Image (cartoon, rainbow, N blue to C red; front, top):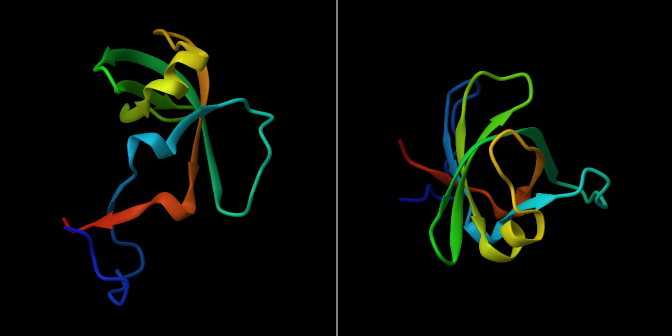
Length: 101
């Protein structure tokens, strides 16, 4: 369940965020930057084809953690990511939603 915009998490506490697949975009590093844009550079660790969206196992640069990024088919086909490929994920702040733990 999403958290009410009137609730404010305590500083320093971990939170789980979500983003719809059509809003997680594989981007060119030189893409135009807008306020609230978040770019994650990293490496593709695996890909699972699912039809309208695809799961990309992604290891952000400088991290040992692998995260699952659900990417829309149109973005996926534009870059055709494969294991070992360096990519940039664009996540716009206005597309995040906060989930209760």
